[in-house]
Image (tube, rainbow, N blue to C red; front, side, top):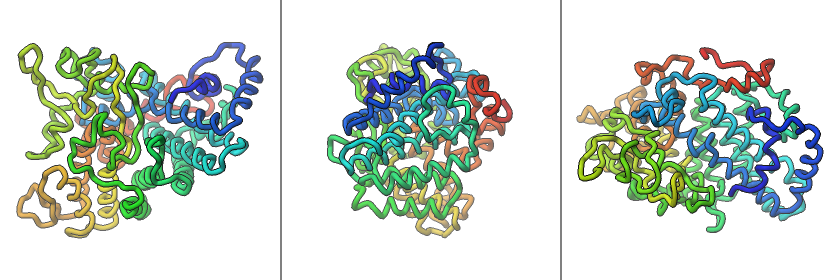
Length: 487
């Protein structure tokens, strides 16, 4: 999905990404802008421009690396067990990252580059003479993607610059300071409402993987849940569930059949980042990234094992006895040269790469089990009901995992959920094992105000709920960009 469009816009995001352009950029800007304006003339031009927005999801600052580093490594799910895996990632793991640690700048840059690409589609497509139905759909897809990127940014950094126009040169970027999270969420919600209204539930096979109405509805439900707007979250998530006839969403019978290249874009998947191996620059790195250092070819047969996302002992012990999800998610050992090596590792993204860091595995951003558990949470937050509907949706997920249902007055204490507080912990536990290694755990703990209670003994302090603003952004625009407290 990568196109030459990225070359056209690379300098236009220099300010917000902290990247630099040649000093003669200002002299060339009118020519570059003219070329940009001339580029977007046909429906095919806009299709290529939209492809570059999807392509941005593959950036290192998004789902290629950053989102699992933040979503899992920052949490109690995974850890760095070998310093050779990377000092900056180890800093995220140990809560010692600061404003110059690469994770902040890489994440910031990747997302704002993607937002710039989305803004180009959104702001230019109305003037293009093309099929009217496609025009509406392409714009809605771009708005969904922009909402997803801003949702990531606001959860990671808090207040962030809100850019909805095209930045044509670095000087224009100086007017953008950090906008309040409330204003950013207003834009996210507006984008998702538009996407919900104008996207289809399904696509023909050639377009599978694009954002859908169900994806917009599901993400909007998650946004409301993050804002603790329980009523709107429950309403929107129930709409997703009730739209099953249109969305075709359902729990895949076998948990193991959710993952792997052969199972991509299945009926449980709501939105996933598309990767494709084959030396095209579209491959995913997860098979190599998640294999233990020193495992040779025992875990991944092509390329080096990088040890960047190793399940903790705490994570391994979080699975109940008989939980079918554990064997489909991780292993506790591997055999190398005839010897058993005790070492945890993730297998959700197992496969045979075409080359180093070049696998077929997609990254699932939203799936139906996530929706069911979010709905159960939203119902409980509106009021605990013993063995009420919230239990029904929680237990749907448990049943698929081969586990007994939890009830309000179960004789087995481990299965008893007697009040609202207990149900909160039950959902937290279920989300942890159901969505393990899919980049949700850190955001769940922060969203529920549980991060410090769970991770305080791991070095976390209160200010760590937000990541530091990249120092490069403060240096570029110190009048408007200030650092998060504590850094």
